[in-house]
Image 1: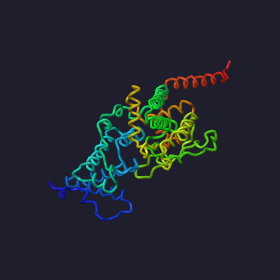
Image 2: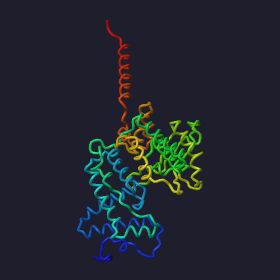
Image 3: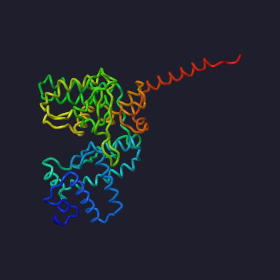
Image 4: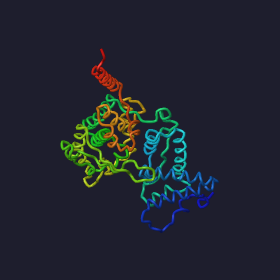
Length: 373
């Protein structure tokens, strides 16, 4: 079958010689038209095609990335959101996953020409890649069927993780390797995910100017609050913004040291990103995931710990420390308290203390009762 005979080919959907005001939107819509043509040629029902297209549009809205910017990390975050926050059944998530995988395979299939088309329009390296692999598919993810949410770190695990991250800085510095800067950046990045309860994508998109003062916490100076501009969007909506108040002094100190003494040494003063690479770019979610996995495996920590576990830990540890539930809900950007509840996995020690506190109140109330003679 020749190139011109394949329904859904890029060259059949793209109009050559036309300059678009928004080339990204034009490319995305052409991909969907092509996928529709490819499925129609296979005899699929209109309702099936329409449902799949709406799913792809929702995935784009939630990731806030076009298909040539998608990576496996976006799939992981998407599955965690559907299972841990929206409580969708594993069978439903699996069906969504199959449909999205079909779209990903279509636009990365060399026979349809979308990879070459994207590189021609957006430049070398800017093209769709496979986003589904064995290790991020729901049928292969341990715990998703029975306990879909990522579990938090224990405080001991968290301390070990941060200590290991700091050790990588010392090790690289003592050996004279260039990696000391990136190791310091990554150690601080993980502390920010935990210290402000962020998602991985939110963290990767932070800019220096997102930090600001909080009149209610002047002791934190210019790092008293953090403006999250790329919070997870509602289906079909724009990224949601929120302001997160700084609450952990040690985390503020780590950020201030990185901004003042480490980031300038990357030599990219004009770049707005908080987390820059040695090549002058912005760190991507997939890179965060890769470094996290390397640290986790080096420490022998359980495989169910993922970058999102740091966000769960933030909620859990603030709860154990007595923070107001509504405050935590606003901090992490949950509209419903039920979502925050899923993130909370308090320790046995906390439960025992809570029990003793409740019993003490009950006993005190009994003592105050007036008993008849």
